[in-house]
Image 1 (cartoon, rainbow over the protein chains, first blue to last red):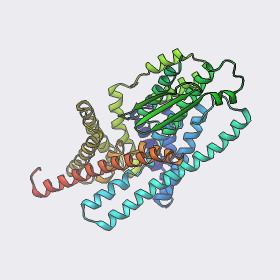
Image 2: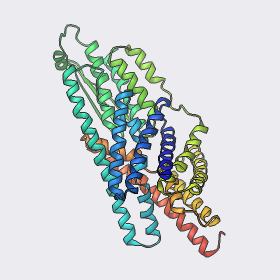
Image 3: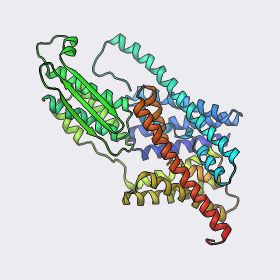
Image 4: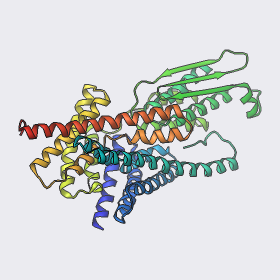
Length: 156
Length: 273
């Protein structure tokens, strides 16, 4: 339990740090941190419950993009602002490192295992972002049809 | 404003966004909105409906990862085309948000064209001091250490590695080293530092420290944008961004690998320590 809290707090801080690195406007940094912390929480919670890394990444990416799209709607900012920093906990940095590490230690089997895992995680992140993107676009079209086309509306 | 300045303004907005790492479809969308608003406003005064204007004026924008082409076509006139090559791309959310807000206001009619042009010109690049930037570089590895199974010891080690990372990045940017090489050097530095820390304190979990250390370098931005571009049907930009992600990942991986291998060689040979 303490571990879970530590991970969530860590993700919150780290994602806010990364948000500063990509020059996110000051007023949106907190929200980006919340999206990242939510993703980190889901990821670690799933791992603790014995769920596979790939599935955990999928769930976490799903939550992050949901949060990012919601924030984008609420604060009227592009989705990217929250998504790019927020998605960071899910990006398969560990898989990349292990792939190379096992190449160096001459362990081909492990290396190709982690390479496949890295690609799989990248794939499920894509899937999650795609699902949420199209989900929010359906709502957008309905909304647009109702109010007619005005110049102020556009895709986020 | 005449067509030429409108096209220039749209291209300027697009260029700022593209250089700041916005998705291609967003850039195209913004340019198209600016062009349509401007051309319907200053076009035929007698035109009553939108459909009439749409017939009269034709605007197109083509945006790729490396350039922008914008055309305004009116019947009976030569088309106005502006092309802009975009060389360097970074990630700067602040500028994307700014351009987004400005173009939104302009399209809603709250901002006249000349004002818009001035505002676009005066968008600033940085909003954080160098110290905040460096502090963030230290916080990212430290914050991610628990996620990769680290305790307090690993958090501290990751923060130490982050300090080294901040130093290398600052020097590298000042020397204008290309991003591929800089990523490699950074990842190598992280690996070497983590291994030295491990040698100093053998109970340290080295993997956690290295993975946390390379997190600021991994191509999260490129992966996210690649996905969003590809899924919108923007295959050229999407493909280019996938390649960008792979190249960055390769740079980080090679750097980390070389770092580990180098320490191993020196360690076993007893040359360094």
